Image 1 (cartoon, rainbow, N blue to C red):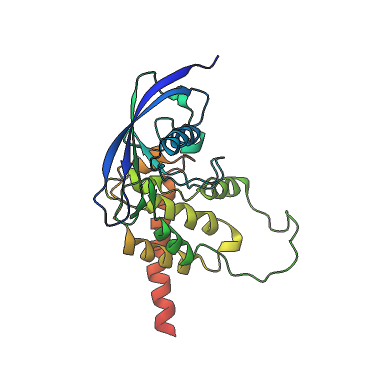
Image 2 (cartoon, helix red, strand yellow):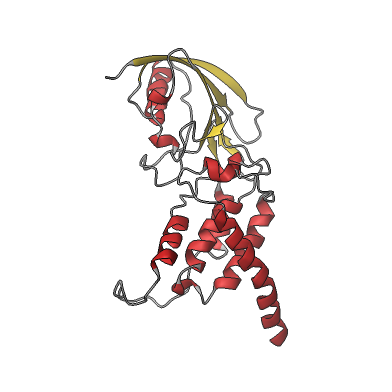
Length: 257
């Protein structure tokens, strides 16, 4: 049976990238505990608008844990207290009546605040543009079993491909590193036959681009804990292995040319 929660929200408000920003304390009474966290914010925004106040700006899209836009720090945790869950799939039953909830944007130099809880995560797009694809002739779709792939390899590639590019790994990392994101995007292609032709140019280009925007990984492991898709840090080890090989292979290719 559902119940109502009377909550207090401490919400980060920031007019723009150059504004200093501050916390607003907002009462949120009568919140149904079956609501998702974003539905709760919707209800709070309706009340703010009805009172003639500015609505809280936050990113959202699919609300099905797929798009990765619902990127919020909730009580100091990326996406909130429930492991393996994006903010849009976090339900209010995880909170208690009378609780104060602190809501902030993801904090990282590479993620400048646009307004309130919305940040610019386009630095992740630049990593993808550097090599997160394969170059292949277009045409009709091949048969699903045309290229035999061992099941452990296919499973590992699918685990890496689960990354939704939300940036929680960056927000959770004390160094604001994007190694888990980059490793997932590198590995899901580098593990498959279709990705072999560009394997070493891909990893070198994507890692070098990552290092332009983000800090370095020092194996804290917080990225894995914050990831809503529970992607393993083992992929970082795979990426580092390929990156070291790439530095030798690509250097030899350049010297021959």
